[in-house]
Length: 128
Image 1 (cartoon, rainbow, N blue to C red):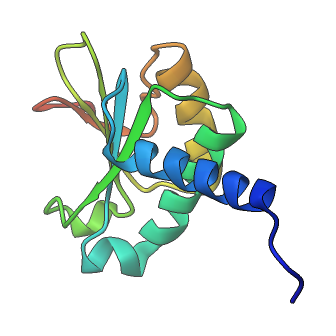
Image 2: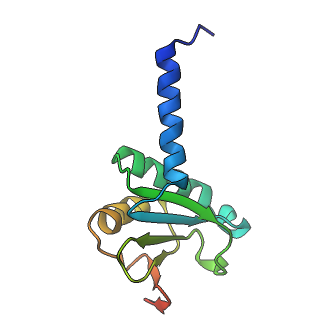
């Protein structure tokens, strides 16, 4: 392995800061991927990766990505919840795939439109 230049270290540091900000900062949107045992078994790690790739690809700096344990609906995993600053209720999305993530980021995070065919609940109100 060759020597690492100062410029390379600066790039690594900036990438790490960006990823930390995605996971811990404050922003306009918070995306919580549910990663209990059932979620992980259903593919939540791939969903978390897909969310992070979409956010990075679109260069969104006001979206925070977190994770949590089981949401209690194992049959609906993998799941995530999206909270948008100023909106009264979070939206819980279920049975996710990487393709659905692309649509949800485009429609809900960027355009403010809930993707009803993927949503289980708006706040405490069920959509299905």
